[in-house]
Amino acid sequence: MLKGEHNKLNAAFAFCVVKQFAVDTEGFLNAFKSFEGLPHRLQFIGSKDGVDYYDDSISTTVKSAISAIESIENAGTILLGGMERNLEYDELIDYLLCCKLRRIVFMYSSGKRMYEMYREKIEEYPTAPEFCFEENLEEAVKNAMAYAKEGSAVILSPAAASYDHFKNFEERGDIYKNLIF
Image 1: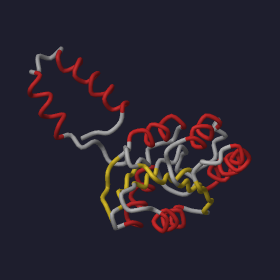
Image 2: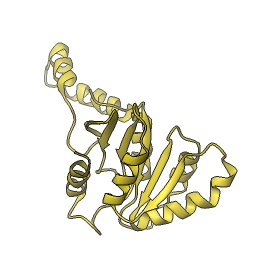
Image 3: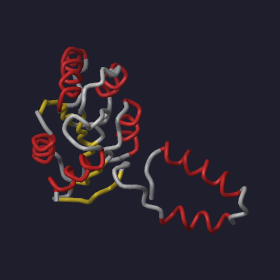
Image 4: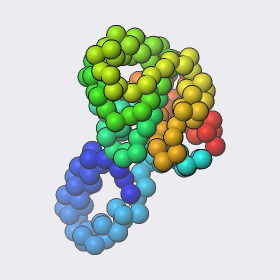
């Protein structure tokens, strides 16, 4: 089943469209119930040692990273960062300081900037999630796996493009999965 309010809105829109083509409601609901989503789009990729792992490598915006955290009930750790495109990350940083996560792993050039922004504000937020910076995806995954608690989830939702280190977001997501399993 798809997770997230944004996916519920997408499903409602799809329903409105298919109704124009006389698709019956039961047929639509059956198809929707079995639809698992597309690869790299908040995709559940499996559990290991009691921790759930999600690949949201397509996430290249602040809103998509926030949606990923909000969509996964047991979200515990997020991996953020990628190619620097000088996006405005203030909304994301403010959200992260007060969110339900336990740990944030920043990576790559945009992650370095987000890390610095977060570090500048964290003293004002005594219950803010722990955070660290890792140079690359491999180190970020190792860190996330080392600190993830049983029953929690780790999400790759970078809020940044992949092109400075990967061919595309698909390759980034595939490497993420291979690093875990």
